[in-house]
Length: 187
Image (tube, rainbow, N blue to C red; front, top):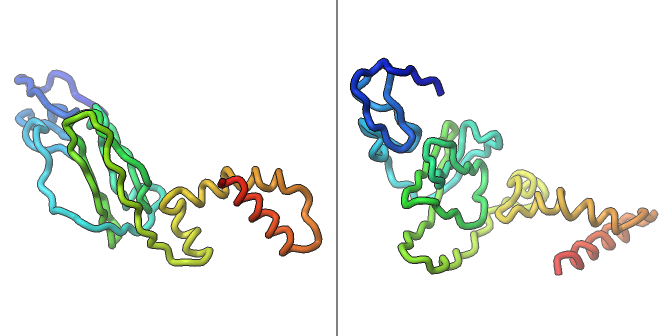
């Protein structure tokens, strides 16, 4: 970020990580997710209640960004294709939710709890499976709703193949042995 020092005679107290606009000293340049003369408010938007994104694993054209840290001008947690399971707890009492969709369709569903106590959060209901079936559905879903694909390929498969040993001449027997090892490891 390039900030031109001392161009503006009157200093604005920009909020939420904003800074004085060097082209117009009467307003602040606000980070994505904040608005107003001093970045004191959030931009007007419509209420989105459901979610589907065209997959963009680069997180450049289609994503849901959740800014939940103390420094709101920093890029937040981005989800690009599928919802990542787990709770996201804000550091402060502010959270920005930004949906960027250059490719349609793009929607999202959000469940949030405002908790003024320090009690544990209630458990979220399990996510509904929206897979398309078959290996194409599994690969196309990238990590799946619970990171299954990543867990299998990056963690379990190498360990299973190491445990498996040498393959035999019977492919079905080998596949059966690999599946049995997976099932034993999951218990």
